[in-house]
Image 1: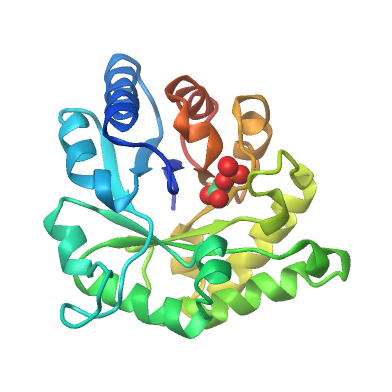
Image 2: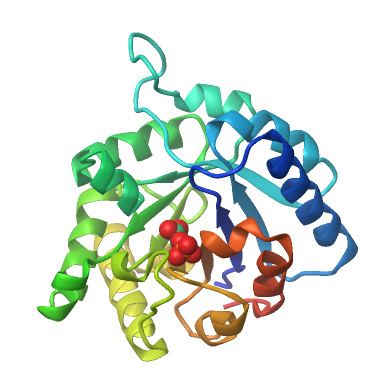
Length: 254
Ligand code: PGA
């Protein structure tokens, strides 16, 4: 089963109305003007979702959020429900990013609850996993990533509603990256864990993105790897030209 590449931008806590509008419009313009073999996703902060949705009109770029609460509605001050995201036109939501795991103490159990809630309203989840530098140095990378898969991916997850993003924590925003061989080893192990949990046929269809200091100069090497089905891009997604340049390196299908 062929997997279509997904090029996803995680804007994190960046952009106000003015620069967010400019960025979204420029991405939309370039996506419309060029022919791409991949799918696009942008995940702005909650405050810009509605505005970015408007800016993307007519361009094949999906809208996603960066987090979600597991409850449908109710007394959860400051939180955003899956229904609210769907109502705004979101198709995707990033869940369990390492910055959420660290800043907000999110556990695999909580992440799984959020994933289930998001799936229930038809959102596709981008579930993030990845090891710390200490875990890597102790040779625990594969074990940590597989445990995160077992703990945070629900048993009924499908290739349609689930994307995995492998992001080594030490590579996020640092300019450091694992070698291509290291990335392929982890992605293959993640697919193996998915096969154990969801069955081989589903695992073969699920997209596994690489994230962590992806930029135009290293995109080709990572995107060419057999088990890498796209990229989750932080810093470089804030520059339309870089984001688009990365997408130009995406092969047609895996
Ligand atoms: P980075 O972030 O591309 O800035 O390293 C990736 C991410 O955290 O999703």
